[in-house]
Amino acid sequence: MSLITISTQFIRQTFPYIRKRLLFTYIIVMTIILGTAETVLYFFLLHVLHQQLDHELLTLVEVAAPSLDTVEIIGIESFEHNLSWRSFFSQEQQSLEWYSADGSLLAKEGNLAVDLPLSLNPVKEEPNFPLFQQDANIRAVTISVYESNLDNTNSVLKGYIRASESTLNIQSTFNKLRLGLGLGGTTALLLVSISSIYLTQEAVKPIRQMFLHLGQFTSDISHQLRTPLTRISMATEIMLTHKDSIQPADARKLTIINSATEQMKRLIEDMLFLLRSDTFPNSTMLGRKKIPLNQLLQDVIGDFEPLFQAQGIKFQARLASNTLIKGDSCHLHRLFTNILDNSISYASRGDTVHLYVEKYKRKIIICIQDTGMGIASEDLPHIFHCFWRAEIAKQKRKDSFGLGLTIAQAVAKQHGGNIFVTSKIGSGSLFKIVLPIA
Image (cartoon, rainbow, N blue to C red; front, side, top):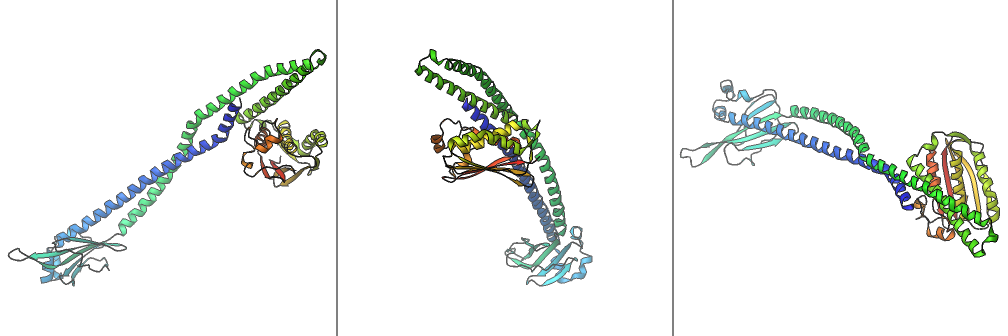
């Protein structure tokens, strides 16, 4: 029975994280896929356009190579008659330069200003071997022009031809491409996020159904167990009212049975409460009413006054001006009762329990502080876990199931609040119950 309840508690606590993790995983994976695809596309197009530009420049210098002899002999005036390369040439965007073997500029055609120095060393001793250069906004290619001697045994360097072209058009194209990819990627990511929410909801449906079925199954078992336990309790109480007809030893056994039965009934009631909280976490807020906090706390304090006196524990209360909170008075009464009961259970004669109320903006903070045994720092993260108890607490109080603080936390969250704890071994604990003001 407790294993089923722990399972439902575990599912309840981890279910939101499973859903968020699935959602984030979908978004991250799709973002990586989209980002990788856009990056590959971008660099592929960049490579293709640069290859196209290099091919255009290389074609231009190869077609213009035969004109080097004409430039050396006749000069630039012959250009109007030598039109073999003009169909590949753009006057505004390109530049064509002829150089002698020693690197001296013989002629230039085109309006593009080129500041690139002519590199001679990397040009190999092969006819028309291309050398590419890149400046900030200029792409250039240079080839060497050789002439074979009469017996074709050696080649003589005649000079160089360099073609250059502005890359501003390519940069403008890629600026537009980046903008388009950015807008497209953002739109795709938005669609992916929407679809991821839908896919996440579909993926967690089986988990949600399993959780609901498990909760219903546990609830049914708990209801079925209450009937025989009630019968056992009634039977033992009847027998204990007629102690004259039973032996003293049997009376003690019946008392043990009756006490164990009552413990089981309390355990089942606590489990049913937690199951309802897990399955319908906002159920108490559907019919919430405005409740005077001072009156509610005074009722709780009145229930504990005989216990304070019997155990020799000093109690001090300081309530604020009357404040209204919204919620279920029975559940809130149980919340404060469980916290106070926890403080008393681990306090000794002469210790003090102090209850006081503070306001912060639209929140009310109910503080319950004791000077009892305290809680170890390594145990604080676990105190609200179902059925968890520290070893020192087990020695102090053996009849507790470890559900009191779990129920208190569940009630606080149902009412839009929370519980915070600070404690130190030997110095006591401070529980701060934070609830919204109505």
